[in-house]
Image (cartoon, rainbow, N blue to C red):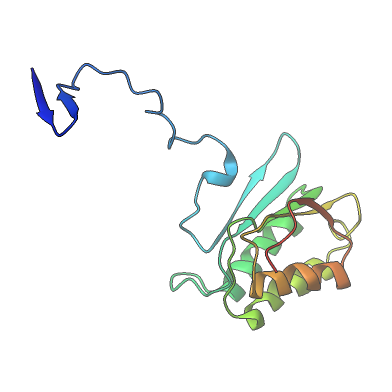
Length: 151
């Protein structure tokens, strides 16, 4: 069944094979919960805690200070040998909210070393999150991974 629409023809597309039908079903960890302001997941096989920091704002269910307390308690009570802080999607917010994360990392010698603290950045890392990344660089010993930040 064909129908003309201007110079183009429209056909019945029910049997078409779409090349990108799985394009938005990402399996990579960094795509997992982009809608959350912050979250973490422990990767036991590598003893790495992956922390994704997507927005410098308080989540109404768990404010940053409570979340940071829970995350650092997990680090203290488990065999976490490295921390990966992923700021790729973080466009900023309120810089004062970064303090629980920065202070928590400073206090933990096990992860605050050059070979155990990694910060992932890209162009979307901006504003208050740029301040966070800078504070980590000044007070801690991170290895930066990724693109330069956006600011």
